Every structure is written in structure tokens, then in C-alpha cells.
Length: 212
Image (cartoon, rainbow, N blue to C red; front, top):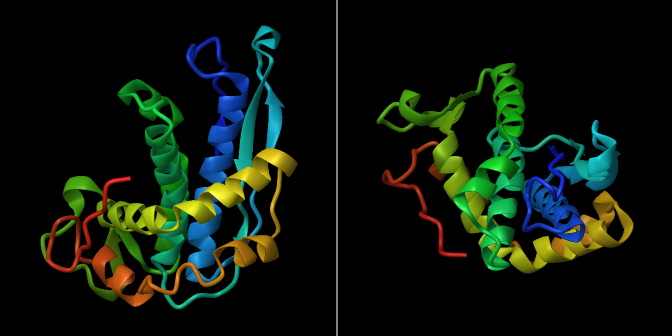
């Protein structure tokens, strides 16, 4: 995910805040992916703006690998970047509706949808989600978002620690991410989160998010 917005455009964000925002985005991916059992290796790095007077921005990536029991884990890992961004902005008092639109990343969702479709798992979004449970071969993106928000609120200290590593050194190994979340996620039931993701937002079985 890239965050190629110069502070000249986001007038109230400093260069350091842009970097930190990118770090939280990738930290969200990393914590969620590791929670579900993937090996993740987040990193952030500088990129020049096409217009040289804007200086540099930041982009990042969180490659993940491994086989896990739940196909919906791919969607959770993808959505966690946006949710971590939102929570970070809210907790630091930077949140505005306009900024939320600017820093949101739709391509993470689209890549996850395509990846899951290749294995016969359908991600429903918005009004195309049926009213009944989606079963073992589908999930609602809105329900996934609810579950991801709930999980990251519980694991926020771990998100902060991964983000701090990324701000400091630009990367974190899969071993480092596992070390950070070790034991912290024992109270999260992945089977229940997967079932709730197939129930749809606000329907029976879905666990509504806590306030950040």
C-alpha cells in the first residue's frame, strides 16, 4: 500500500506523521496476518513524488506466506492495514472524514477478493451480501472489517510495537512479529471470528467492534 500524499496536500500532517501512518498500516497487516498463522515481514520505505518539490512520501508492503485453516484469513490480513490506519488517526486526534478517504486503500481489498476467488471463496461487499449465513465458502467484507477492528483493539499494544520497529528501522522480520504478539492473542477465538465473518455485519454471530 502506498501513501503518496505530500504534507503540502495534507496540510496538517508532518513528514514524520506520514511515515508513522504508513508504519501503522503495515503493522496492522502484520499483526493480523501473524494472528491467523501467516509468516509476515512488513517493511516501509521512502519513494519520491513525481513532482520533485513535494519531496518524498512512503510506501510499504507486508508479504505473507504459509498455509492456514481459514481462507477468510486472507481478507482479515488485507483489511487490517486500513483499520490500523483508522485507529491510529482516531487515537492521535488526527481523524477527519476527508483524511480517512485519502489514506484508505481499496487495492488491498481488491487483491484479497481476487486471491480468494481463485480458490472458490467469495467475498461479498455491500448490498451484494445475502441475508443468510454465507457458509464455509464466503464472507462479508463488512463483517470482516468488524472482526478486524475488534481484534486490533485487543492487540493495539502489539500494533504499536510493530509500528515503532518500522518507524525506527524500516522493517520487521516474521520472527520479530511473532515475538511481539506471542501470548497476547490467546483470548481471540479464530474459529469464532471466521464464523462471524460469514454471518454478515450486525447479524447473529457477528461480534460488533469495541470503541477504539
